[in-house]
Amino acid sequence: MARSRLLSYTEKNTPIHRLSGITKLVFFLLWCITSAMTYDTRVLLVMIAVSFILFAVSKTKWRQVGGVFKFILLMMIINVIAIFLLSPYQGCDIYGSRTVIAHLFAGHDLTREELFYLFNVVIKYFTVTPAIFIFMVTTNPSEFAASLNMAGIPYTIAYSVSIALRYIPDVQDDYRRIHNAQEARGIEMSGKAKLMDRIRHTSAIIFPLLFSTMERIDVVSNAMELRGFGKKKKRTWYAHKKLTGSDYAALIFTVVFCAAALFFTFYDGSRFYNPFAG
Amino acid sequence: MDKKKFGIREVVAIGIGTALFVVLTEVQIPIGIPNTALQPRMAVLAFLSAVFGPIVGAVIGLLGHALGDALFYGSVWWSWVFPEAVVGAAIGAIAGRLKVREGGFGKSQIILFNCVQIVANAAAWIVVAPILDILVYAEPANKVFIQGAFAWLGDVLIIGILGTILLAAYSKIAGKSSSLKKED
Image (cartoon, rainbow over all chains, first blue to last red):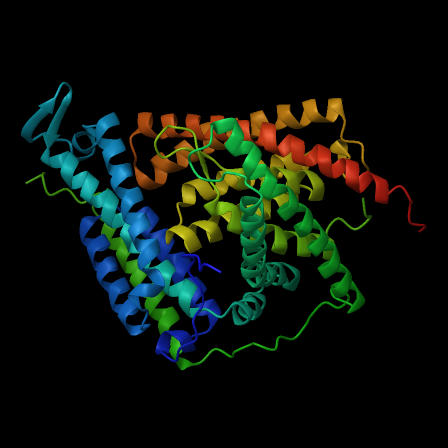
């Protein structure tokens, strides 16, 4: 069966794999928030550098993430082109100046401000990518659910997350099986078919998939009910890991780094770094 | 419906529903406009919200979109994650009146379902998503509103066609087996 390009957990023994799931989640969330808030080029560049160092430490191989990475690159190029076509002077509005490099076509002058703004859009996007790659390929799903619960999230919700991560491969196998079966029966799935036909053909997969999923929900929830899930206020976790010294070190580093990054971004009153102000 | 609002079934429905939503991320039907495609996973989200209620809908939307983005695209576009929860919660809010599991998903329920999904999608993709895009990513306003409008159109179409068919079909099957009532 063809492997998909989905990111998945791989067991390795690196300092990052040994960290608790909750440490990685805190890092990941704070990292995303910081990256969402700041538009300061210097902060973004430092964040990219840090995430690539972590990426190297986690010994993630290119073939684990390469396919996904190429896809992001394509999306990013389309996004940048769309911004430029629809709003060629967004950068000038933000940085408050206008330095024309070349005249392209009516209403679309290429300015240094716009190029710099688009550069920022791209690097802002790429500050988060390595963090997500690291989080996804180094966090064991069961251990992650346990640490969610330890962080104070009700164990029913933590268990939902755990079930989601646990069942993605199963549902994906179901999907492939149904997809292949329908193709074998002569239903055209590729781009050659017309739009309405494609919707109909897609529903030929969704129908059996959804109904088998509903059945699975029944089976699993009956099994859990029989085992008394949800009767007590607390539960213990097989995969639970205690926080270690390196967890605390990583947490402190994350909080300090993000606070410093935000302070550095906003202390001049603007989230943008303006090299054109002179 | 059960007396308990949030029982084991809901926990499992969130888990496996999210898994299904994530897997369907890769199924996209292009409609000829760049970067916009019909997403069958939206029909599945609408279906699960209508069957299991607002909490399940909102969490599947939130978790499923974030996980799906992370696993397939290696990044999470947060400003489009939260609107997904809005859609799930809004459709889930009328779950009781749609009577899908009781086999009562008829004409008036179909009309109600589609009115709510059109409004919910409008709130999500034409109001919440573009505003978050502007606040978080400082993207140009005209670009995000155009994008939002296409997303709205695509989601309304796929939920209106596929979502309605799925609900009607499931309601027929589920209605038969649940004609017996459990004694309290």
